[in-house]
Image 1: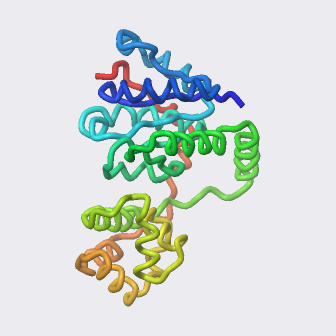
Image 2: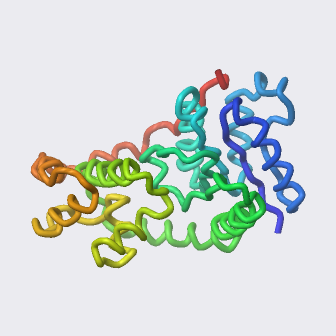
Length: 258
């Protein structure tokens, strides 16, 4: 099945991007990206919007170069893709702490090891899983049904801060991001799903017992007061101003990669 894949990466990762793009083409996918270094400067905003509009899946390459120099560029491309209901698949090129907002995407494909073909096979499977016509049709059907539900309440920003602290502490222990949930599940005797909710900030903070917070802090080797200060901060307002944002203009894309 041929799918249209939009490649998003900073210029310093262009060599890996081209290698990956060529591998995707050999796998019978249509890859949307600049074809050579000279075209980078002419890869203008409107051209990228059109490419994203055609894409079934966006593949985003994460690296130190991206976070240090050009993350804002790729993030805007990602925001536009998500606004257009495109599936986003992040790729981890180096062992880094990727930005928190990427956790809302599908699972990250790890290319940090030497086994390129194994990671590439996982990428192909994920592209088919999230970008196939059947998946897109199901996603549209779900969105249509959600129109009849009450608007969502404003998310609890404390949960994001809580999850960021958990991930930061795990990172300081030199644990690979793809092993965070397994590590917490083993050391706290909890289910992997519960561990994932702590990492992603989807568990209601007010339902966490003090004894569990103490145990979690001990596993993470941090002061339990750090959790308490987050939980005791002001909860979100009941007013959901996101309703008004539905009528805002779609996200823009900058006009050059530099």
